[in-house]
Amino acid sequence: MKTLPSIIPGPEGSGFRLCLAEPKDRESLRVWKNLHKQSYFLKVDITPEQQEAWFAGYLDRPDDHVFMVDEDELGAWTTVGVVAARLLPDQSTVDLYNIMRGARTAGDRTNMGEALRTLCRAARQAYPQPITCKVLSDNPAFGWYARIGFVTVEDRNDHKLLRFEGDLSK
Image (cartoon, rainbow, N blue to C red; front, side, top):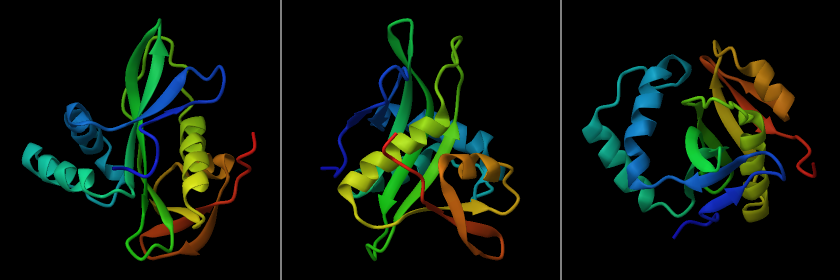
């Protein structure tokens, strides 16, 4: 059983929700990760078999949460992205990972920054540990992370360690 709820609603009027990934989401996750692999540490394509093995392990980790970002598109939920958080094995930090928009709807209303802040809000309620993420040094999204409330706490060889310090009361 996962620690965080299986569905986390977005803020009032946001038109999105976060839903824990299910087996039906495996292929979307794999395809999106392969399409955006230049923004991630793993630079090779993930095979269906590798994805299957990873997902089976993920299901057994109670403090690992992959949320599909669903957008309300004319009364039906359409998956447009993913945000994930896991308590690291040493329990020192909540690590955010697999943050990406995978699709767009006609309405294109989902703010992925707000989706990530929604996950941070839920993680903060469940875990007192700092919320961090690792971002490759050449990733153009640093400004996006800063606008959400992340600050660089460590500059490593090929990536930066960011910590969430934003205001979650909004």
